[in-house]
Image 1 (cartoon, rainbow over the protein chains, first blue to last red):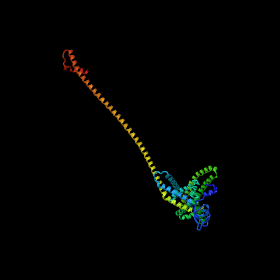
Image 2: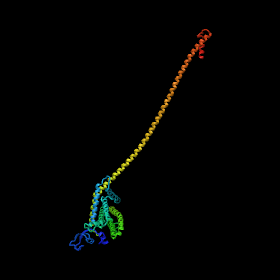
Image 3: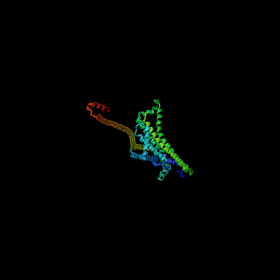
Image 4: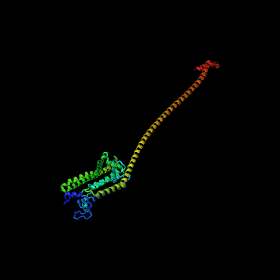
Length: 292
Length: 156
């Protein structure tokens, strides 16, 4: 909706702003000139500046809602199929669900050699959930935000995985699991792994510790930021293509072709990113279970 | 791109969904799939076994058939042999019977001939005596010439 009174950069910024609810600090001057009173105020942010002023005490309502909504969709759909599943002949949706479950099960079996009842359901949840979140990218960028303006919602980012909070939230969850299983399985061996690798000498402990901790911390970051980066870039290109439509009728046809081409290519990207997130989770947790 | 409470919210949601999936989604789905897998494997194995059995039965049937054929051939052979034997035997008995009948007929003929010859001889003796009597004009002492007459008769 690069409207008549909106420049392209305003349009893009508008599309990249989350619908944020948070606490504005005391003394902040709001968009309408009012000053936030003593102790701050929990309000809906009006624009990116207010959202930035809220700092950590804010929540992206759109990301959260879409993410949880899609998670519930996943749970509902798979639970329904799980209830329906028998050893008889499967049909329709059950086939698709079982295909995904079988695929995830195979991947987990190939990669993870320990015995852990958590890994496979975790991998399934990640794969389907991330896929659904990425899938929102294929909905035309303006459709949902435009519809929501009619109910008074000014900002809307409907692809949760273009929000680093969402991807990092999952990555940190996986990271906590990694730490938990490392300590549970290896015990003191985990400390040894951090301090006496790769140079097995006490004098090298600080260097080892530094290298290993960096290596360890790189895992959740690579996990979360890879997904975020890919989806953010993809979304950005969709927005840019959408902005092309405002450049006049002559641009409509090439923009339309670009839109279709990029969307088709993106079908591959969203599936691949969901798969990569899942596989890396399995690999990291597998490493947490294995002694060197 | 600010990090905020959304991160915590997402983590909590993540945990909830994973726990739900682990408790209510994964086990029943996988159990159903594994059960079906087992069922299919059993079915395939049963089909294989049935196929194998069928093959065996076919082999057996062929074997039995050839056995029966050779048996039948044997029976026909022996029957033929027996028939030939019976015919042969019948022929032989017939020949023997014919010989016997012929021999007895010949013997009878010989007997008849002998008897006729004896009769003839006796009649020749009488006739020659009567002739001689006629020629000599007197009776001949039968006893005195009996030896001569007998000799004559035996020479006939």
